[in-house]
Amino acid sequence: MNPLEFACVRGYPEILKYLTIDLGLNSKSDFNVDHKTLKLEQMPFIFVPIIKKNTGILEILLNNLPHLWSFDDLTDMLVFMKQSKWRNGMSIVLKSSAMHFQYRRLNFEQRFKFVRDCMMIPYRIEDIPNPEYEDDETLFEFK
Image (cartoon, rainbow, N blue to C red; front, side, top):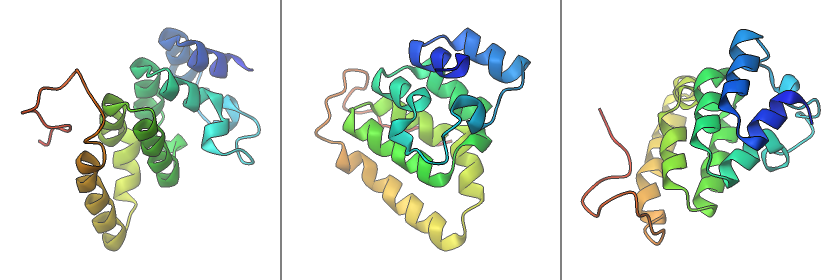
């Protein structure tokens, strides 16, 4: 495990910021040399922060390094967050720079499908208890 993976897995956002912003280590191969052969759930630097529900690490990975993630990676993250019943994590992904970057790259048909699927998220996670939100609040803020 290299220092970038260690900072993500152990939950050290200050170290992660230093390595990615100050030292410029910001490619997937810096995080994991075998990233091309591994699935997202096999990469501990993103999977462990999702399982541990670490918002600080997740926000750094998605907002400071938006070019790291493909649209498929982001949708896989949403699936993992649904499985781990982490509503706040889903909101972080949908509001992230990485999601905005990838959304702009979609064609009209893909955008339509994405928005349609996102509109179904609240209905798909109704059974997930969430003490953070009251009944009258929505899951996502739209501005």
